[in-house]
Length: 389
Image 1 (cartoon, rainbow, N blue to C red):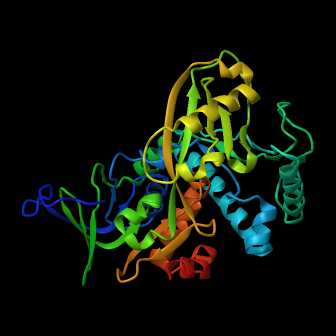
Image 2 (cartoon, rainbow, N blue to C red; image 1 turned 30 degrees about the horizontal axis):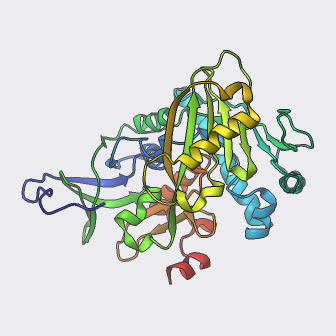
Image 3 (spheres, rainbow, N blue to C red; image 1 turned 180 degrees about the horizontal axis):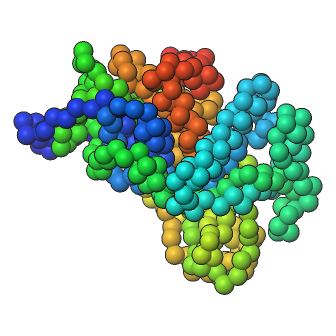
């Protein structure tokens, strides 16, 4: 996020004033606008460097999953049982908020509560799923453990989460932004934030915007705006392919396999969506480049051939990549920028941005305006402070 002297329209820039400016028009930013829209008398602007939903929010598989990058048993070991339970309940809040959104405003984003299978691709993973299911049942979660492959496609077993859902993520972003009724500026990349006695000045190529409060929801792109995030956030590319519509329905669940390194679903029009297969090439998939790499693309095709041979011959209509945002300890960060009062941020959903979306953005708004505690997501937690040092 840089700009040259030659491109900067220094003297010609109009100046605008807002109570709140949200930077980042993905699902997190649009959801923050949605929650702010339910408050009174906040003059708010939503900015995006491209088009809303055009980043990672519009480049994923559309999975609203309860859970995080780690299965429940590993979350218990990493964060403690009480905290793991809280995090998984927190993800359930997003699902509840989406159902409330549909009740209030209709389902314009193809929300389908199909449930999901977490599929074991090895005996070791099956043992992880069994242990996770036992712990989750003890902690009161609605979960079903299956010791055999529900798809009969060579998996070892599964967990079934009945409340997980699929969406059209771009339609969801547009619905949230539209409901807020706030102005949206697209193709307005913020390249500098200055603190002032009154708040902050945000500089784009076309204008200067004054805001009392700023909410940053740029996720993986935070280090490009604020270099101090370079040691806290890692951008990781994910790749997806989508076939032409198939003649028959072969899948009625969201599927998440091999610890989430592969994920797939069949869309309402019959298309088959498959993403992932980056695990063997992890080092090559770090960075911001929106490219397709031959190794991952070949791996996706081999996966189709091995697991879904009837799909392998279908023409591929779409191939794309998107940039996910990973943190050092696998949890999102909420914080206030040091030396920039009233500039708040959330980042780092570790590949589960849609699952966190509404609940995490609601917490961001409550943190910024009501002084709510970010809890386990507090960016001051020990692991992040150590990484920052």
